Amino acid sequence: MVNCLHIACLQYHLLLDAQHVREVLELDAADEGYVHGCRLWRGGTVQVLDLRTVLGEPEPSLPRAGLVYGEHDPPLLLLCDSVLGLVQSDETAFRKLPYSAGPITDLVDAVVPDAATGRLLFHLKPGITES
Image 1 (cartoon, helix red, strand yellow):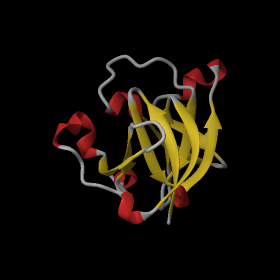
Image 2 (cartoon, helix red, strand yellow; image 1 turned 30 degrees about the horizontal axis):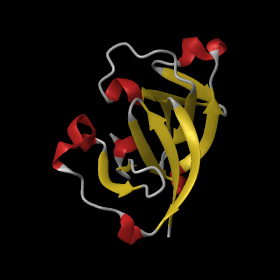
Image 3 (cartoon, one colour; image 1 turned 135 degrees about the horizontal axis):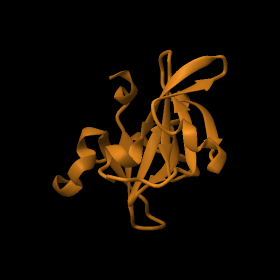
């Protein structure tokens, strides 16, 4: 079994390996100055990456959620629309990306169909934060 954190970003639903999530943050209007560049986190600085911009939104609105994510130091602050919760999935449930996945193919390596909703949950590549 694989433990993943389910997040929403634009029309996409992403799964991130839970073992690399260091902290989940709820953002509000007071955080507006921190959504680009770098942000102080626990005595250090983390790079900020707005997933909505990466996924093609030219002028994204203020994100509502963020998570500090990464296997190595320094981690990365990923901004998204919402954090939906933990998901456990059998490794055999992961499927190859459909040809029609579009701009998300550079970020993800597999999909998991969600039987309850019928939507595809895209699995974020493990090394995405090491660029």
